[in-house]
Length: 210
Ligand SMILES: [Zn+2]
Image (tube, rainbow, N blue to C red; front, side, top):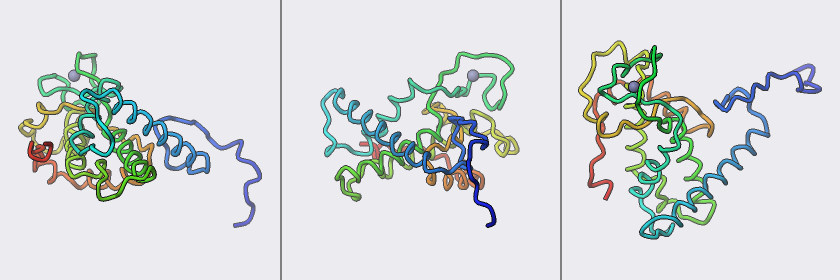
């Protein structure tokens, strides 16, 4: 606690969008806030354009899932399908036609921001659709399936499992883009230990979605 830094201009501001939790600065807070606002607006737009029209107060977890799936078309993370020869390869040697998806880490952080925004905009916690169980289950499933599709190291030690949930989802690719803070750290922790959870093949029960 001797010399407080006089200036930080020499700090390694690599400003990677890959979210670096080491650089916790006031600016990152405001970045979170502005990102949250952007997300909230995006969601508002989505509701507006929804067919049939949808109002916030009527939103359920199922609508949130719909929204998250809709976002996949803008994803930038390659997620190999179960039939792709590169399924499970962390570093595929060649291109493949598998789709790009939203990375689990991005979705997870997004949901966290929107969940907060919902309540900041007057929504009641007990009706917060972003906190719905279906959403949590969905995120967990995306996390597990992306981890498999990408061949995370801890997964390679395990035998290949039947990919029921994989076909069902083939969502994004797991990427710890912790842009949002807190929430996904916990999830990441779960993921590292969570091989048993992964084995439990969490398939979203339709009853939850409807
Ligand atoms: Zn592929």
